[in-house]
Length: 457
Image (cartoon, rainbow, N blue to C red; front, side, top):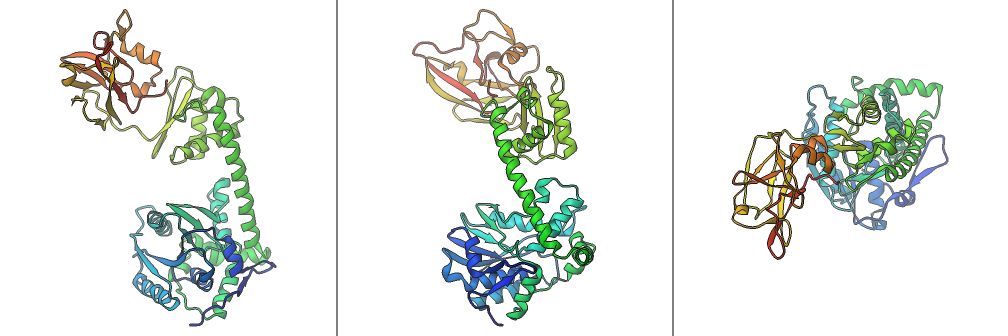
């Protein structure tokens, strides 16, 4: 097998731009390690070859990683081939094995891609750069597939050239290079690469697009791949602008460190900016994004509903609720049994899994719950309805329901707030108050009770 010589380049069809080892090096951010996601196909092989020729100029070490999906008969043969190529190039080889089989209703291509990226993200060393061989034609196909699915600007931006992946970065340096240019380079340098037979199976959407639709379109619109890739770049610019605007709107509408949004402030924005901010808000919270239909439900039910309503919009992995003027996003609340009781000696934090939080105590002097014989025999219960108490410093008893309203506790949190009992008497509401007669005074030892789910009030 012949290898490329330093400085050789790939020429993009119908364009004066070229990718040389010098230009490839310019695309690489500084990093301690550079990894090539090496499938054995022609694209990743050409990328590996070019970087191997430039290895002495890299700021960090160079290695290859191969993902064996274990879903095709040839998978082990491809693994052997990739290892052999790396041995010839004297490049360290790392293997990841994943189970890439599709679940019911999931496309095999999507399942393999999801498994591959999850494995790579989990494995990638800190601050390392992983490079892939996806090119201009892949970018054009991705844009069209997203368009056929009715995607918005984020989907139509297709694949970013540089993005975060696990603890490192993912770089696609060939997005301006055509498939034909890569093939020409591989043939000229007599590279040996794998041809996956499934790539010709037009039951898969991308293959149908690649084998039948794109060739027909390109007969009428020469250079279509380059044009579509450029269109994806325009969408990426729009996303950046939208993200910048969303960040400004977020600062104007966010009313607490917990990320609660003000409904009043949201209503001052146009519908498009509301949608843009809501997506940004959910993304910042690490929650899956809703469909356009669900997003419109959030706007209709949360922003236009009655002030005293408690609407809920939920989808897998996330839910949005409103209380008064606040909009809250969260993972789905865990099932909770209000009748369950816990015993607590306050020395160690108590995890209340069903309530979704942690109850803890900090020793203080002259405040909090007085430490005495009662404190050593505490029962943790939850609201059943009808509870009344006299908070320390007040002259009368109050219904707990009214106190929760006064404290601004959202409806869905009220049954989860731990109530502290001793010998059958309610002595504290964790995170909110100690009952009259049970508070520490002057130089007495006390406990400051904290409840991790306590909302900001």
